[in-house]
Image (cartoon, rainbow over all chains, first blue to last red; front, side, top):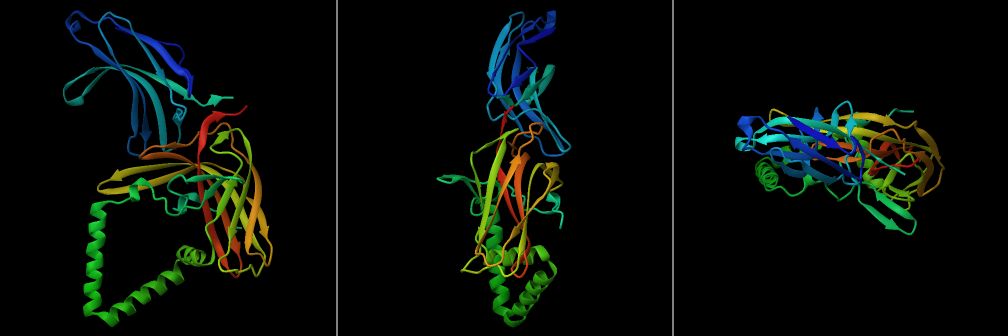
Length: 115
Length: 229
């Protein structure tokens, strides 16, 4: 079981995303560790663009804290006709040859800075 | 009045323009010289071009007269039947690149700006008849995708402003327009991915009878992810 806690799901560019993650594994998985990444990717008609801004390890039964600054340049979350920009936190179990066994994803909503 | 469709015109500059800070404000020059990453030096393309150049000289050596006639016919056909090609070629010889002046840069969502556009004719030429400038700004999505071995590009206009029309007087060497515009606060900021982009564009259509018709000056500008209340 994975539990993700965030300070907010809607974050302005230039501000910090903070939160924590705890993983209580089944008895068989006690020796493994998970990875947590924060980043964005595109979806839609075009070839995929993506960037990972933050990466940390989540050990079994230990609460992992994370802190990631969202760049001023964004990009902001966007849902258009040809293109979608999706920010997300992914917790996964690294497999062979960069294979990712997804365990949990949490979509973030990145918005422009309000003046 | 013609309606300018961004999808039909490749010119909505393929990359953001370099901006210079001057005493008058921030100067955006029409695309020239600053090629995007995808067009910069590539050894494979260079070899292909070299191969064609060598072929050209071989053909020229053996079929000199006929080849020149063929080239001339191709050129005349392109010139007569492709309006855009013809207009761009004429504009290149008759005009200096267009310029846009903005009071601040990058722009922000929800903020109002005033813009000055100006373009000069070459060699002291002057307008012979009254002309017309049509100004608008637009926000568009642009995606690049691979289909087989080809790379396709598709654009979609998310939003465009109502066109504003300005007149060009007779007998001027430099024509210009001043306009106010607001960047709507409910639209996305600029985004430049390798394959996906959200671009903001200033487009000015120029129709000057006797000199040029339907020539566009396009300026890609950057809008920051900041909303001004």
